[in-house]
Image (cartoon, rainbow, N blue to C red; front, top):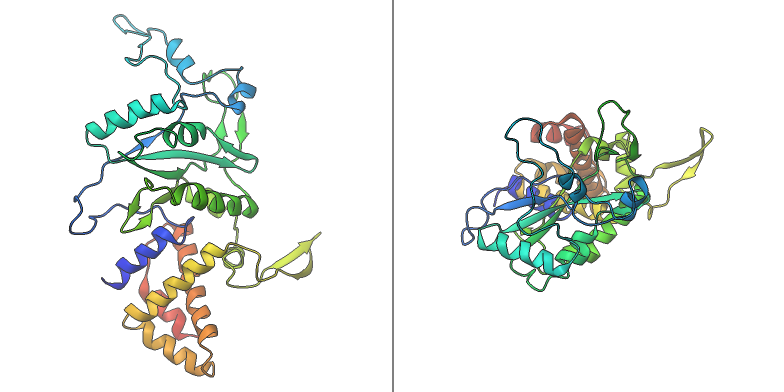
Length: 317
């Protein structure tokens, strides 16, 4: 397997927040196409909706209230299965069974988590995970990190109210990564590509807004020391244990693969190590930092990985 395919594997599993993985053909013995359907969980109650709308609100209410807008327009449409509660495992089991019978291999749940906690999670946590047949279909997460506006039943004449900003703190992202690994990635039905859990992010630009500079990102990846500031004054260095350990592992693993599989990066890393008096750890960290910088600017500028630029950056060290 070539260097670029190996790099793709690492970022599926390891750099959890970094890349939404494009689905390519899986291993030779697997079906050539996996059919995955995005699942928007709007058919169950939630405390946030109770507060913003009224107790018991779901988007079924909008379906019930739909009105004809022209002659022959048949509204409202009544669901064949009725106005069901998707947080009920029996209801979700019916959805799973039908999807599996008609060739859907996976549900990708729109998964919401803001600074003050989760949103609309019961369809997955209670419905899907509680369904007795959830081994018939795989599931995965797309972190829907967009701003949440009060648009259900929205009147265009009214101003739109922002309820929950999509941008989260680094501390919240730490909670997210711990949660998805412990609760979801380890589930036997979690969707994996080449053995790596699938995880995608709806809006990379919103995620990167939590890290306005590349140094902020590198510090969060535990690759460089950041600074603590108060009232604009530097107060001290961040400790090595602050930041996200999963990202530190991811870029360390990426550096291992780059040195092993890339024809130019490997020899460059060896020369770098020699110039650092044989300090393998320090030389390895330099490669990991360069890779992390590359990923940050790829996502920020929406460009593809350029190995020549990475080689040039390593050559200057």
